[in-house]
Image (tube, helix red, strand yellow):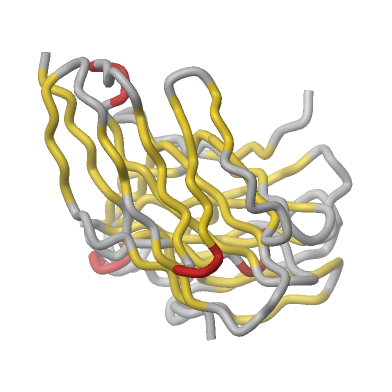
Length: 111
Length: 116
């Protein structure tokens, strides 16, 4: 079954404690992306990747890092999380233009 | 620049009423893709429809229908005979040409509440 898998689904952490949210897709897609969703703001892009070792900033990259060492994985790294990074995060992937598959979402709370 | 506007922040309707969710977009591209997603209380994004800018035919899927009008840059979504299970946040989104998941532009969403 074609899918995008995020882990964990829920996470509560403390300020400053490094964390990684994993994203994996089994469709051999080239494009992958991370979005965060906040009330009244919709979904905003954090980082995206066009292929292995090719990443770039989206609209709200501050405080985040990503890597794309393999085609299937695109982890989101928060080196020093802060409360303003409390949000709902989505990973997305697609093979080409005009499509997008989303993961189930990760609810992150930073206290 | 691309922009998607969903002016309706929240809508409440009584069950069995029809409801239309508005979506207006801005783009300079002649080719693009438009989407609607449903986000139920559980949080996941459920794909509803994808529309190519060259295809202006309206689409109906059960109680759902979509009205795409290039002349007004709108892609409105109508639910007929609404049900409580339709309660969710609905997002309209646009993908420019030659891009995919790396370049989605979302509206801010419309929260629909269907009252039994």
